Image 1 (cartoon, one colour):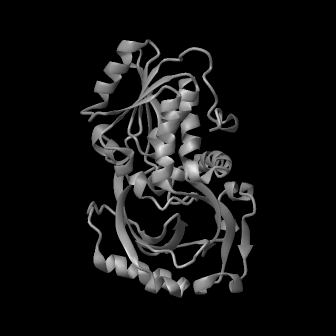
Image 2: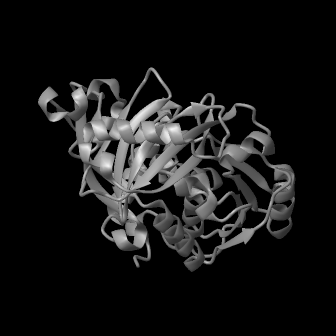
Length: 338
């Protein structure tokens, strides 16, 4: 295992920079914890549920800046993550990251931010190159992350750097701030609670956006496909993951139902089969539902206050693009603590 992530996570900087409590163990929390541990902080992750039970574990997890703001910051965060994933893809079995070719249908380069010009190999397609009658689209070889494997790898990285993951339900952020302030004058808390921030902060601008997926046996599909329907709450995508093909999806704002809806599942399969007909006969392996932590106004990444010497930082509201910006946001948090 690489000791320094090719220079991205870094090693210990020579002595601890202070104790940090990271609240939340999804991809945002664990990535933040890994980066901070690499900067010399002693990091404790407090989590109400194991990473395998978070929304992150359900994600289809293609790198792509999807439904996330603020636009002025997202590009840089996304490109930082893209560079890290490019390195991790050298060890896919260990990290869960692979570079996979695919098509983003219904998108043009001119509609995207400046970040798109820095994505290696991203190119526009002609009408005859885009399936499903979309007429235009983009092709790229992008990171596709097997989230259960990746979350386990992140935890392993954290623990190897001396960090810990503790099962602990947080009643208020003040509780974490108080504990962080007792151990070190430079102590800090980083709030990475995703949807939980709605009640914990509290922040009423955080809203759940429900996503439903269908897992099927892969009938031999080696590339990904994605097309968002801008006029509805549905999208069409399939991502080849080890041992399964992930089909999606939905984006239902305000819907908190954790149960998979059979009619929605059937519609997802039907939409995907219009692109690749062999999907219609693929055996269903299971269903997944996740609640994306979308925040009106975009990601909140800032330092709020310094009561009694313990700093409180926020890193939440990443919606359906947590994987896409996780490393970029983690380094931004580290900069705020420097």
